Image 1 (tube, one colour):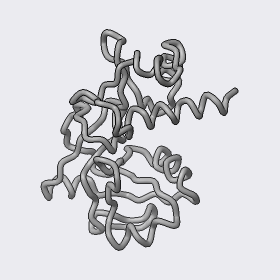
Image 2: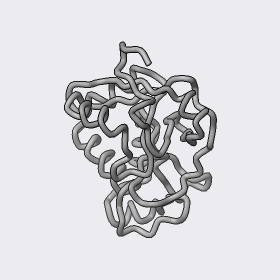
Image 3: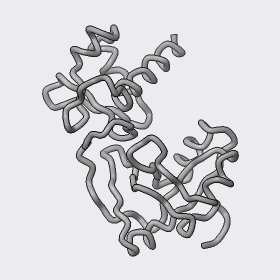
Length: 176
């Protein structure tokens, strides 16, 4: 049963972040009625997924008729992110197999709208585990901000930026 719950959560993440066929409104909201009618979700199931998601990836509209992902989109939407000055240091988790490429070209957003960064090493390790043997990169966010880079913070605490150049990176345990 747990596996089915995980699969339903992953499907929901896809439907709220990457479904290019759905006509999202400008802020990334999807009608709950679409998910119940076309994908077999129940309102109770959606509430459970939102409440139990350990990263708090999803949120309901105030009137509980719509749902959206807080970040991670490949479709162009404005999820009303707040521009903020970041802490001095942020972290990015990746798999060991991606390290050489990152240290050559920086952290790129790929098919997403932003590069995702975290405030804790623990979160970065957990993200990295999804990509193989985890590696944590330390980002000199203070220097990036001083150099004019914009940082956004999602409502669930994920930091977002367009790109992280190699000059702002180090592997956890090495010095800038």
